[in-house]
Image (cartoon, each protein chain N blue to C red):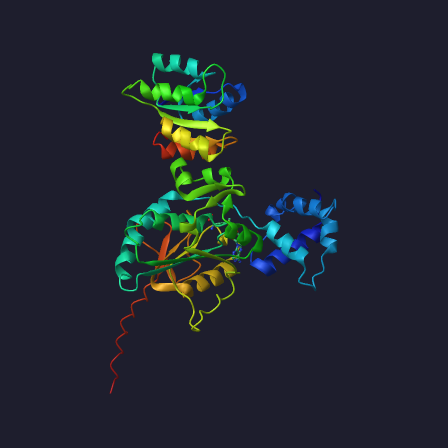
Length: 292
Length: 121
Ligand SMILES: C[S@@+](CC[C@H](N)C(=O)[O-])C[C@H]1O[C@@H](n2cnc3c(N)ncnc32)[C@H](O)[C@@H]1O
């Protein structure tokens, strides 16, 4: 579908303002495909007409729909399985010790899309039922797009979404077939809460007034299309929400290097980051003896 | 080189799967139904079988039951590749001894991931 330069600019500006995501020139070809469904829904045959219907002064439904259609929501269960193996093999055993007293773990899946990442985490805990008996495991999944959060809350997936990442046995174990599709079982769902939220905004305070902190934060394949300054802001948000001894897990191939000095890579564990240790104070230079 | 037998009555699917498996470094042979598959296994047992469900002469599940009953020491990994996508079929496949289950249409990445899960890729 043809799109005028003016429409492209307006859409890119709208996307940046609402989500921080950039739509650089070399990715603008996506606009046509991304918005064609919306054009059909409104019975319109060009994206320029669609854009013309939108008024920047109103918080219109259309603006929201256009932004959500432009976002990349690609996700699947156990994306980068090796990282989840590290979580199970190293991170969770450590937390099981350090949190043994409170028996509480809090995890945040930032940019959770339709929920597969948060559910993957829930599966890890549910498959170690004995170890986590008596613990409170709270997983928060947030995304700037309301439509993916709605899907995540329903917890129904097609067999094709499920088989992208899950083994046959896992599919049978964690899902039940319902007339609405394959639905996630209650024992996973009750660990997770899904909320609409822009990661560049502060999280809502807890009922007591304090800010929530998390033992593990996952922020994977979300920052790819942020510019450097926005990425830095995002990392600052994540760092302030991460417990002092917590872990940040990024996507395979993503890094904090050069973008924040608050988080640094964990040695030997690609994809995992921790609060940077405060730099050792340099020994004060010896003042030259005053010459009397 | 690892070997793979593709059992499907659709020439198109066999062609697609062959390309996928060859790209993963497998040596591929083909069969159009369960009976041909048995003959092929008698000649040489493959490392992995991609198995359709609905086929003339002998269905995939019938073939799998026969295969698992042979007591052959080098049992291949069997991955169902079928349009059947309901729990009853998956359960039946598990009970008959399938190692994995892929629902059509599938892409190369899904197939690759399933082969990794069963330990042949
Ligand atoms: C490619 S998906 C990745 C999903 C999942 N984390 C994974 O790795 O499979 C990126 C998600 O980030 C969300 N997103 C983009 N900008 C965001 C923002 N500013 N705040 C929260 N979520 C955002 C998108 O809506 C999309 O669902």
